[in-house]
Structures are given as structure tokens and as C-alpha cells.
Length: 489
Image (cartoon, one colour):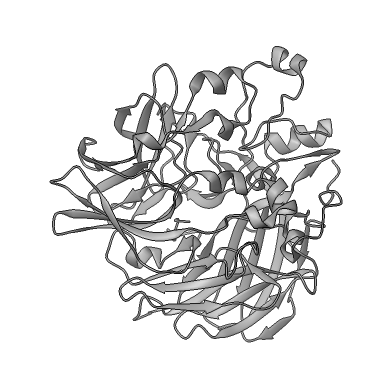
């Protein structure tokens, strides 16, 4: 399979290098470090995202579509090593064998000709797990929005096999952002079931199990596109944005997956509050129409449910992240949204919100193990300092007082900021931020290490080449093989 950069695109913005292919798979020990890595940082940051956006002479159409590549930064004794490998999913293996895109993705169809659509009429679900890293049972997996996690070896990054659940919880679409309940030692997540009718299947799975327990099946006429969801101590919260699936179109149109959803703002957004204990919808509330990819956190307070998320006025952010605008029309690109807190009174049918910062933000992270489902103070994310410059800064927001701290550097484009808590930390932000940054000037990527409290830059770990912009990952401490670690975002 040819692994090549995207064709000769116009040099409209320096960030465009991040949408060309990573040059190679490889391993590097003792990478050059500018600054100093904290000695307590002992473990691995493992991430996933596209390693290439082309197969042979064909290009994927959307940033979310490229073939998944695993990346790992390992920390020990103040040194850092690196490895990256393609995830050898069935989608990858078929593309490699055929020399062309073999399975449809989020914004790309594999059934290009009329003959292909006639001989292969129903779109096959992809297992190209390019969105997030998590743990299923005691195994490390890469996941996407189809329910086919891929198990990999966390030491070598070699692909092992598809993860198989020992149950029959129905559904064909899922989220790549499960939640972990530390009190119950269990995972919560959901599937969207399209056959024969439509429903949301909410499930629970014990930490070391591979068997899901269906706790709720919620009928729905037209399922919404939901990338993430919220969880409090007692509830699962689904935010149903009015981006609704046309099932007939999905089956027959030949369009890419996401283009079978229709934006219907007149329906508004509906919040469903579901009891984790009984599985019943204990409350629903409506708000104005808006869209979001990522929830930040949720918690209960005085008979109300607070839901923090990154909001957009409509779903046009999806269109702006196709490669055509990213590469040729940066002025059209929407890279970050508005941090909102929605208040859902459990005695009222209307939800309302407040804006928590004037800074735009995306790819949000919190001190998950300490703060998820509870009141919290800090959210870390990426943002844009000016229109048309994609993601060019890291943002720390104090949601209690609205203050912000920024990190940015000329011609540098950071990825998702992963928080790693310091041992025996007393404060919520005591630890470090880990972010993979593209330096368009030097045309390579580096791992940035920021102090979570002072926001001072501690180190840059230099790679010999650039990495394609990725999405999500997790930091696993040195005991990750025997301990549950943070799963979220």
C-alpha cells in the first residue's frame, strides 16, 4: 500500500503539513529533550489517529477517515522513547491488499461506482479504530464509532485481534468515549441499535469482564449523531442534538456515513437523564438547537444536573473538517467551540446554559479519576487564537472563576492535552500536560510537557519527523497492566 502525503495542495497555511502522511513506522530510544522530564513520570502516553489519508491513488475525504496509526511515548528515569505502528484492522489489511479504500468511513464511501453499489449494496461497518485508546477487560484496545474494538500489545503496538464481547447487546453504532465509574469499578457506554426499530442501548460492564449488561433500551424514531455522552454519580445523560439519521438513506444512498444525517434545528436539543440503577428515563428536557462532539464533565447539584460540553450553533463544524476546506479554504475551518454549562432542573422540562469562558476550546480533558461526576475546577483543551489558523494553542480554563491560561508558540499546532496527575497530588491540577505538537517551521513534531499548575513549559521531546494530526489518547502509568487508569477522552 502506498503511504504518501496528500497531493500538491496549495500552501494556504503552515498547519497543512499535519494532514500529510507520517513518513514511517519505527522505534526510537532516548529521544532528544529540551528541558527536563519529571522523574515521577513513569509510564506511557498511547494515542491513535490517522497515519495516512491516502491509499494508492485514492484520498480519504474527511480528517476523521484516515487509516489508524498507534503512537506511544514511554517515560522512564527522565528519558523518553517513541514507537508508532499502523493498526492492522480488517479495513487496513483490505486496503493494503487491494491498493484502494476498501471500507467506507465517517466522510468517505468505498462504493464509488454503480457496479460496486449493486454488488455490495449495504455499507460494511469499518473496524478502522482511529478515535481513542481505552481498556476493555484487561486488554488495551483502539476504538472508533463502530463496535469493533481492536486489541493491541501495549509494549510493541502490534495488532492482536478484534475484541469480542460475550453478550448480545444490540447496536451498530457506538461511542469511542466510554465512562468509568470508580465507585462501581465498571464501564458505562451505549450503542445505537438500528434493527429492526431504533433504540439506544445503555450498558454496564465490570472492569475485568468482557460481558456487557444491558441496563436500558430507549426507543427513538430517528437516532441522533452523538459522539460522546455525560455521566454523573447516579445518571447517564444523552444529549440528542437535532442531527438525525435517515436509515433508508444510510442503506441505499451510497453516501458516506455522516452524510446520511440531516440537521433539523426546529426540533431543538433533547437531554435524556437515565438512571444507572433502574435504566429508566427519569427526566427529559429541551433546549435550543446546538451541536457538540465532546462532553467535558457532568455532576449533580441541588436537584439539578449540570452538563459541561463544547457547543456549536449547528453541525457545520463537521463540514469544515473535510480535507477540502482544511487544505484549501482555511478561512472556512471551525476548529473549536464554546464551553457551556447546561443546567437541567429535574423538576422542569427546559434546560438553559451559561458560557464558562470567552476562549474557544476543543478536545477537552480534566483530571478524570479525581473529578469526573463531581464538581471540578479545571478543564484543559486546545483552541484557536485567530480564525483560519486551525488549532494553535493549549487552553487551561478555571470554570469556577472563568480565568484562562494559554500556551502557544510560533507556527506550532498542538494536539489534545492529556493530563497526568503527580503522585500523591494535593491539588486538582498538580501534574503535567502532555501534548503532541506539530512545528511547521522545523517540519517535525514534538511532545510538549507543561506543568499543570504553573503552566510553565518543562520540556520538548523532539521527533525526527512530523506526525499526522491525531485525536485522542491516554496516559497509562507503570502499573497500568494491573490497575484501572483514566479512560475518558
